[in-house]
Amino acid sequence: MTSRKRTAADAWGAVLRVHAQLVPELDQVVQAEAGLPLSWYDVLLELAHAPEHRLRMTELGDRVVLSRTRVSRLVDELSSKGLVVKEADPLDGRSSFATLTDAGAAAFKAAAPIYTRAIEERFGSSLTTAELAQVADLLGRVLEARQ
Amino acid sequence: MTSRKRTAADAWGAVLRVHAQLVPELDQVVQAEAGLPLSWYDVLLELAHAPEHRLRMTELGDRVVLSRTRVSRLVDELSSKGLVVKEADPLDGRSSFATLTDAGAAAFKAAAPIYTRAIEERFGSSLTTAELAQVADLLGRVLEARQ
DNA sequence: AAAGATTGACCCGTCAATCTTG
DNA sequence: CAAGATTGACGGGTCAATCTTT
Image (cartoon, rainbow over all chains, first blue to last red; front, side, top):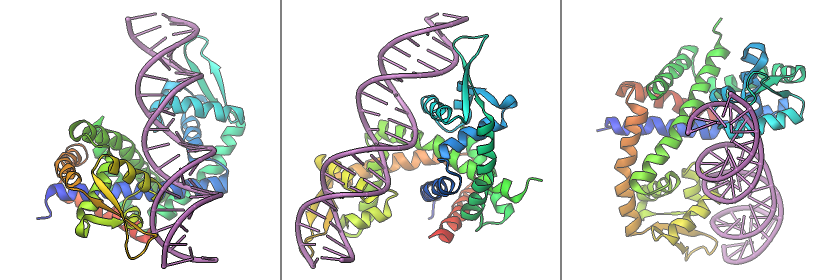
């Protein structure tokens, strides 16, 4: 008993519950303390880590855990707030870039410690560093097998 | 380097990505092979495990990873399909029960192996049984600390 | 025709407001 | 008034269709 399938279902259930619990909590913290929705933060993060602080919309869509459609709408919002700018690719008229503005970079810099601290407090605090690394490793292997 | 905060963020990122990848996949499999959306399955599962195959709406809402509002709408749908029935509590007029019908129990029985197999294949296959148990344990501890 | 990107219609889910019963 | 439950309005997200450029 406590078969393999049962164990797999339990582990998967834990993933679902952790996700369901923490996403709203983290969103709320970042929203309250940094004034950004979590989805904005994700986009800013990817741009901040990109060379020249800019990415094609498709590349952005691939990195963020969101559809291209959603990314398109998010970039519009961020652009209207002055956190990014959208510019056409001079070499390929179909393609456009999203580029972080100074204001966007500043907003990200301000939000980043809030987010990482929230993760550490709400997600990490019941596990040792080694255990966290283990979680990342095990779930990472699930992902590798997948793509 | 590779500080604790970094490790926590990586682990959390893995949770997000696994969730984002697998939920649509599993939903699709169950939908295609069992003809049920995943949300229906969750409700049927809880009712199937409940004594007498019935639960108060509130109890159902607490067990499923969904709001009471959503549960209310789901039970309406399931009821229109004949998979559950809603009945008033004779002892407390405010409260109502959702009870699995025979058709609902049959639908669940048919869907359960499909779902557990899909989990095993898509989520569990890259990990040993011990590792799966570890994931459940570690994430379970995150949840305990939380509530 | 194919690739990049955007738009419109739509689904899923929650929040706040409401209704009913205790 | 508090508790159980439902309804209406809304936000976040995706899919299919569309437009433009290659």
